[in-house]
Length: 163
Image (cartoon, rainbow, N blue to C red; front, side, top):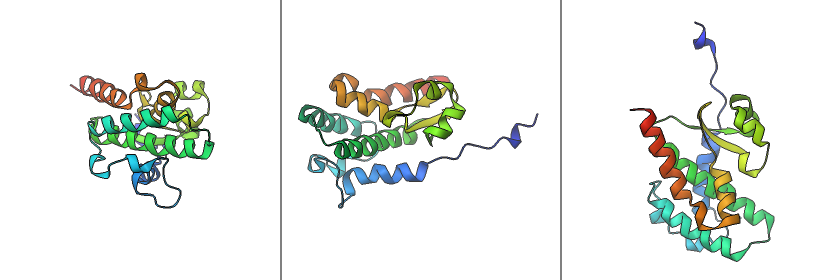
């Protein structure tokens, strides 16, 4: 009855849009091996994530030890992956930081705070996606944790749920 009084959670959409652009545009503190990224291929299409998978394959093989470099890769690539999902999904997803997301979704709370859950894509309590965590998994495990596949599955499930 009073659902119109419920506030939407405060999102971090603008910050993560900026992070996604920093992936290939940032001059100061550039993304690790930024030269491998072709800006023309990074058009926020699901297909562009094939290019991201190739990039992550190189980063995975390099076994980067510098934690600052890895953090930039996870945040910027994860932001780009999330922005691809946001722009191509039917559900209206928003970036929520861990604190806000853990209040909206029990799964996030149970996972605990980490770089992979520092921000999540939230559409509703049952529509939550973890692009940063997927990038972490790719860096740990390699190609079997494709970010393109993640986006395809989320978008396909989203389409089926809204038919």
